[in-house]
Length: 393
Image 1 (spheres, rainbow, N blue to C red):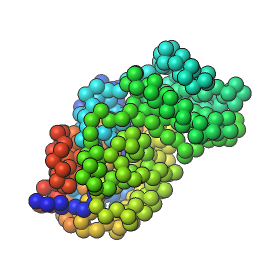
Image 2 (spheres, rainbow, N blue to C red; image 1 turned 30 degrees about the horizontal axis):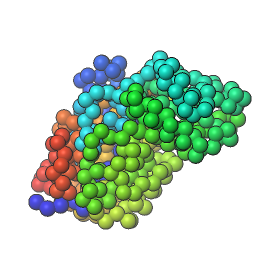
Image 3 (cartoon, one colour; image 1 turned 180 degrees about the vertical axis):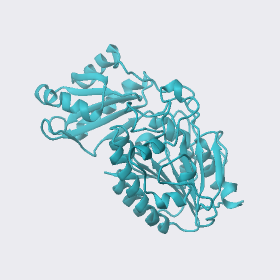
């Protein structure tokens, strides 16, 4: 069949779930619907450009009604990997399923891990419990400044987070500490170690954009690796290189915000001739989902909707745009953790603007398999391609 699209662009709206999965109760996420519940909570969403692509066809979203004449192919996907983690979600999109969930520590990390952390880094610690990142630096930030101890905390996700004031622990030193912690956490199957630098004075501490994620390396190859092996470009925008431990990445650039992420995506389209551009827009999750900030989430979605025409105008007829998510993070529930939800898959190309329903996909890996087939790699074991639906309709 030959390569159908020279460039594939994935825009991942981190945490934009579209309704609870059948096994949501097992994770304590009954009733979660990030987009649907959010729309109800804020009196409706104005997403007219997103609506044209079929977003309103995926779940009941106040203000975003279904359309029969969509310009994109739309569906929703089930996560087959265990858990509801950023890492497992991204890896499954790239064709890698995780049969065993990363380990979580809602009661804090075990003593032997923390003793090893103190010994190897030379730093004592504060915290070691599950907490909101913004709240724990307000609780412990002043003591951290006084005692020069690192703030260590976790959440409902598989994360070992280390917060430190930039005046006490310079960012590069914090990254080195996280590298040490990453090696220790491998033995406990912890998905990510996250550096959380902050600045300011009590009570106005502020986290900076110099966060850095140190993920476990994928246990086997993903479509990113296979693309790189065949000398296609694989560009990561945002924290993509962190999530894949830089495996399969040929070029990457970090971002300060969603707006910056979109700007960098447009810039990278100017230099990508053939291959994959994979962007994570993290503000939906980090700033609004985890903080149960419905107004912020609404504003972010509506700002993204205004950017959509600029992104689409940048595309050639030989480009495929895929908009998706990695999990939910319903800001209307008491929990501030991720939620086990369907995620959208919206595929748009100027080659064919007569969209249709792609149905409920059995795995996130259908995106990876579509990329695998498009670039004639034929490497991925999991997933079902929807490429023929797009090019043959």
